[in-house]
Each structure stands twice: as structure tokens, then as C-alpha cells.
Length: 467
Image (cartoon, rainbow, N blue to C red; front, side, top):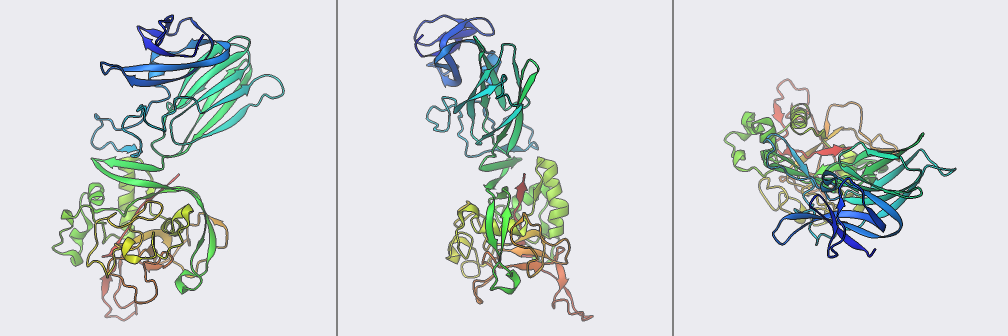
């Protein structure tokens, strides 16, 4: 038989362009010297969607077992927005995926399996388990099973679709289709059984490089920060002593500082309403400006738990190590003084180029695509503040001291200057504030007449998502 393409029609499969035999779905019919490759949707001349499956030559006789529902849901199924979702039901997606996952011009749309793997059930080469690592993109893999007839295969996740290919003389095959991953890394197991033998294939799929979370038509993006090692701190700055090596696992970080509109959506109102320093404010008219005037306590105890309830995502403030690693460009190791540049005005809103905070993501990002890590508003970190650092070289995912009186803030704000060195915008500069924002105006002198001041008017935050 020549190589050809099979089209589903009239309840079965017909080879396109050949007038070939009709193979009934879930019924008999042999494809001689051929191998089932995959299915792909396309538009017919009357704009109807049809499924085309590909067959290529293979020196064995294969019997095809495919259901219409299986093929329709198979390899090229994609995740995306659903128009009938309730407004409060969050949408989590990869915004960089094409609108039509079956676009023939999409270079990431695999027409053929990426690889063929052999699983042996007989002899000394039999193994009870193995693992498979996939990229976040959709993929398809052929498994050849060296065993007797009567085997079974089952996947415990709906993003894996299986189609069995059964041949003669122990030549058995399985097509596995893996949907693209729009969210966090995920894993599943394909269980193969033959007689008394079982083989467990642990499948791990990487997370999307960018995740978009949408709540009530309001969206924010998370960028994948691949883990690695870096030198944290600066031994020449007393507050940042001493330089030390830190190892970090991968995580996601918000592309921008948390905005007024997101805070209002989650909390129902903006924080400025109860702050004397913001009397007569117009922040409701500035939805894309970073929220400020928020305490560490309010973020940790109120905002983040409510965001988790609304989205199911356990967002957190970044650790100080995560913050500095991302500000420095992560694996790109940019080696700039500021996040994304040595030129302050290119990446940071500061005393010299503005007189108030500005909309997020209006200056240049760093190499990771993250904005405003220098300037605009200072950003809370998760850690208690302690100087110098107590961590030793090589620590993994440090979380800072177990206790303290002040929390770390990083990045500087729109009112800061660079009169002394690189200023607070420097990616290794460290500052601290009490988590409740109110502290002694004179530096806690202990004087009975010392008033209490609010210190968080220019402080905001961004979020991370760990996995």
C-alpha cells in the first residue's frame, strides 16, 4: 500500500484521493505495511471541520482501533477560554498559544510523532517503570510494545489520549497524544499491563513559559523563572553583606507589580480609602497603576488568601532570593546595576523622570520580560530582614530568618534619588519596613512624644507562584 492520508467520513475511515476501502471505526480492517501517525483537523471547502489521520509505511500488519470521540479529542486538543464560564470562574491559559491550535502554518503543531519508544515485557530487558519528560507544547509519541496480544494501556489524566495499534507476532503499538500545557508543570502515569507484568510510565510535562490568569475579565501574567545558581548580595554594602551563592528552584513571577484594579477586584475596595495620607485620592481612576499604601500584613493575611479562594492558586510574596534573582535576569545573568539596564531612566520611574507612580509596564523590561523591578513602587518580600545575611554558600531556596521585626523591601520607588551611589534602585540594595507600616516617626527613639507615621505610601508588591 502506498503511503496515504485517511479521512473520517460516514462513520469510518477512507484514504483521501484514492477511493480506498472504508474502514469502520471500532471494527475490523487492516492497514497493511502501514503505521498510524496522527490526526489533524482542517477546514473543508464548505468550511466544515474534518479530521485527517496520517499513515506511513511500516513493515508490519497493524489493525486500527480508533473511536470517533477519541480521535476528536486526541493529540491536537487544546485548552482555552470557554464562553460559558461563570464570571467568577478564573481562566488560566498560555496567552502565547495560537488562537487556532490546528493552524497548518503553526510551526509548533506536530504533524508527526516526535519519537518512537519501545517497551519490552519479555526477557531480561523487562523493566517495571520508566519516565518521560515532555516540553509544554503538544506532542505525540508512538510506543512499540514487545509482548503477546492481550495487553492494555490506561492513562490517569485527560490531557493524555491513547489510540491502540495491534499487529501480528507480538508487534503491537500505541499512539499517545499529549495536549499542550497552559499552566503549571504536571505529571501523569500511563499503565501498561501484559499478563502478570505491569509497566508504569511516569510522564512529566513542563509548565507554560507564561501563564495568564483572568478573573472577571481582568488578567495578570506570570512568567516562568527557570531555576539556577547566582551570587546574592554585595560585600561592599553593609546592608547587603556578604556575597554568597544561592541555588533556586524554578518558579513563576508576576510580570508586573500588582495593580489597583486587581487589588480592588479581590478586596472590593482600594486601600487608600482608609489612609489619611491619601485623602481625596483619585486612585480609582488609575486602574493600571501599581497599588501602594498596602501593608505586608494586609497582603499576607487578606489579599493572598482571598486570591487563592477565587483562583485556586497559592500565590505568595517572593522570597528575597527569588526577587534578587529575577531582578538580575535569572538564567540570563544580565549583570546590570538596575533590573534590565545600567541606564536608570530606561527601566525605572524615579525622582528624575516623574513626580508620581506610573502605569506598570511602560518602561523597558529585563531579559525575563519582567517590568518595574527597579523604581515605581518599592516591593515587599516574604523574608524577615537581617543584616548581614546569615546564609552560607550553596543554600537551596533560602527563606530568610525565622523571625524578626521588619520585612525586606526591594527596588526603590518613584521618589527616590541616586545621590549616594546607585541608590535604592540597585538590584542588590536592601531596605526594611515594619509589616504593619506604622512606626515611630523619629526612628523609634523611645521619646514619649514621638508620633507614629505611616511608612508604606510608596510600597507595593508583586507575586510569585511556586510549584
